[in-house]
Amino acid sequence: MTTIDEQRLIQLTRDGDYDAFNRLVIEHQSAVFAVVLRMVRNRAAAEDITQDAFISAFRKISSYRGGIFRAWLFRIAKNAALDYLRKINRRAETSIDEDIVYFSETVKDDTQDPVADALNSELASLIEHCLGGLSDDHRLAMVMIDVEGHQYDEVAESIGISIGTVKSRLNRARARMRDCVQQDAELLPASLRL
Amino acid sequence: MFFEVLNRLFGRTDQSIDAVNAYVKGNASVDETQLVEKMMREDSSLEKDLSTQTALLSVLGRIDQVEAPRSFAISPEMVAAAERSESRLSGFAELFAPQRKLALAPAVITGIAALSVALLTLGDITGVVDQSTSNQSTSISTSAVSESAVEVEATERLLPKSEEPAASSAETELSDSDGSMAIEASPDLAYSEGVLSGMAITNDGISLPLRQLQFALAALALAAVGAWAGLRRARGE
Image (cartoon, rainbow over all chains, first blue to last red):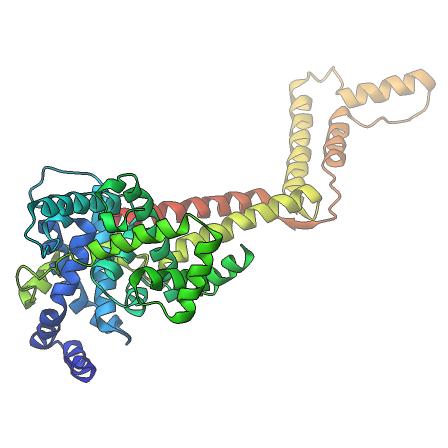
């Protein structure tokens, strides 16, 4: 979808056109759901939060004042996700809830080696644990840039901070992740262990 | 440290942070690579740290992209339901949500009120501001005089005619003692004068209803804090 198309749809949405807004929803729903899911790590909650975020975005479309539209959506979704996390007051806990999403379930593995599979799975679980130990701000920066691959300017606009602050948070998040993972260094790939 | 603070203040990153971020991502420029290599020469543990970070990012990069499990398209019924579920209070509370411009209003009101109380207290201590008591002293002395007048009347009525009022007794005694007609002021009048002189206040500072102002501003600050807490609760935070 080009920027011009997007702006046209946004203008139609301001006039109350549900179909125009839903085309925007289809374009951005995977990206928004992914960020929310990585933040709250609960599939059912992520679906509810994402749905509420889009409803809220439609109602508040008049407050969109230009810039990256997806970043504006991320901002609404991020606030909703943080509200959810504050309400349930949980960060790195494990749960028997079957809706909990673990990174280990979604790590691609190109090899057919079961040993490598097991190591990857353990490493992913370790990363999961370490990510959960980060503050919400640091985890959000790392998830959006290193996991979901968004650009610095989009993340900065989503969170409402400067690009410099995004880079600083990312740097600190990576350092903390590194320190956490190094406690179980044997799980790292041999070629990268020193 | 000073430049780090300045950079954060102005939203700029340290060059080294940019270089490290790009290096671990594998897309560092020649200059950035040289800077990182120089840092590694100066800090022997940095190479290991950066290698671990690179390994981490390689795993994170292999995480599958998440697809939306269903359509999140909205309908008029959904929007109407969302509007109905929001109470008037939560709608009002939303005006003060963290991302809104009014978010800082309760904090600003509390700050101004608290600062005003502090300044008034400081002024009271240093004498720049005085408690306004001129109306009070006038009313107190007036009431004291009227009270004393009432007492004199009551005394005169109660005493039998054969007995002379205290003032007259005092006068009589004096005249008896030295034959002069010196009249001594009655004790009740003396009391009134004492009240008046006791309430005389020199007023060098700005006269304000100090205690009342301090109390009102403190109450305003507490009310602002209470309102802020209540609005957070209404928003479900």
